[in-house]
Amino acid sequence: MKVQDLLDLIGSDFYTGVPDSQLKALCNCLMERYGIDSKHHVIGANEGSCLALAAGYHLATGKVPVIYMQNSGEGNIINPLASLVNDKVYKIPAVFVIGWRGEPGIHDEPQHVYQGEVTVKLMEDMDVGTFVIGPDTTLDEVKKVWESFSKLLGSGRQCAFIIRKGALEFEGKTDYANSYELNREEVISHIADRAGASPIVSTTGKISRELYEYREHKGMSHETDFLTVGSMGHASQIALGIAINKPNKKVWCIDGDGAVLMHMGSLALIGTNKPSNLIHVVINNSAHETVGGMPTVAGSIDIPGIAMSCGYPHAVSVSCLEDLDRELALANSQDELSLIEVKCSLGSRSDLGRPKEAPADNKEAFMKYLST
Image (tube, rainbow, N blue to C red; front, side):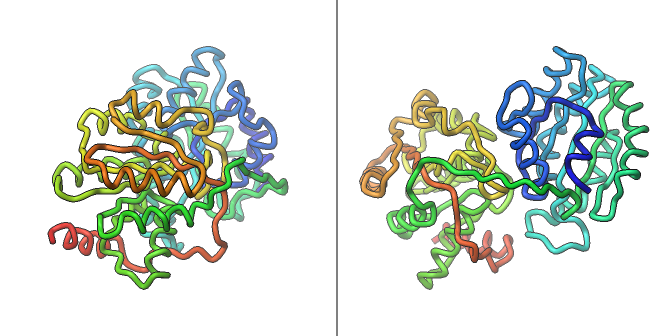
């Protein structure tokens, strides 16, 4: 069905969420209609904060907000869903639009499999009215469901449309870009070269895929790398846990701007602990590129400044390979916590591969390597 028809049926004038490739039609339609407009469309840091923002919108206007997300974001909304908007607490209505990755019976990446199995059940267990929209779902069917959903919303409850792959269509085209020049895959090769035999924890999405491809191209083992294929925003805490417990090893974390924003409190915890053997590299293309390219707010904030205020003793920003190589060498030679923000362009190879090994195999090889 056309995504415009779904939006017109819902009739909301406020949308907030975290982008998802399964919801690309929705995301592109919202960008065409509103762009980034704080009164109508806000791309949030994480799904839980989006729900809280939506609650504020309802408190101020009395209207019903819409929150969109990949199903991996369901975990982030559980707390505010149960303790803030639930009809046993503040009775705040909300509509969720959730991309169904890992739907049973449809091949997907390992990090989506279990989440896909519990996607609908999680919403039902949270007392959220739920309806699945597939490629064959008609507008009339959705209209009929919307009648019952409207009654739920009127009583201060919530409802969710679970969107199967290929269910929504949008004929418009939205191009995303920034003004940065560095190529991310080349940047990752420079980081990996400088890291040498030191362990690397890489964040979810194309960063981990490109690190994996670099090792494949070089004919190298993958044992030095922990590829955080899911759990967006938590790679830096994994790296922190390793750095604290392996103080004689230099530990590298290759992060993304969207991931840093999702759980920015991690910077404060890292800065307070100050592991002198941790190098935190944040590749900033100001976009959620892995799921389509929609912008983040990282292009308008000072990530090194935030890190310094959180206690990082050394934090810089670079936008050319010469500066990158200099800062990588400096961080590697120093005995102190460092953050390097690398400003990169959007874009990746169309033939970019994915890890061939199972995540559990990656874990076992990585742990064995750490123990040597």
